[in-house]
Length: 155
Image (tube, rainbow, N blue to C red; front, side, top):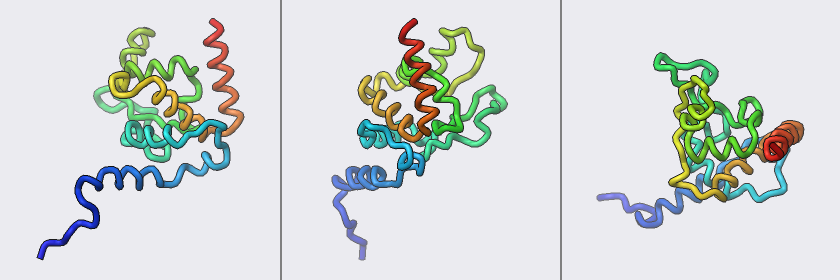
């Protein structure tokens, strides 16, 4: 006798999305939460970024070393990575157009596997993802990154 699913197929995807959204945040998010609502940013991060950068923003192993083709693994987005070394405008551009487009414009000889999400995500969604990522950083790192963003905006 076939087993009847608990949920009809039409309800399965929303139920799965809800379960993913309820997964625990990295511990740092509880200790260093931002004032903005990061719930939607976390959901968008899990949907679009976690497959490469990790559910807990941990990145891929050996992210500082390229593979045989010169491609670098996805870096972490927590405080151990370098995301916070960049200003907001650069991060938004990187997410929107993809890493290689940005690096090529900067004449940086580095192979990025980061795809562009500008055709999939609205500006507000990209900003929500960044708000979520930043909400997991310790206060001193958030302050340093904000200073970089303010300095870049003033240029």
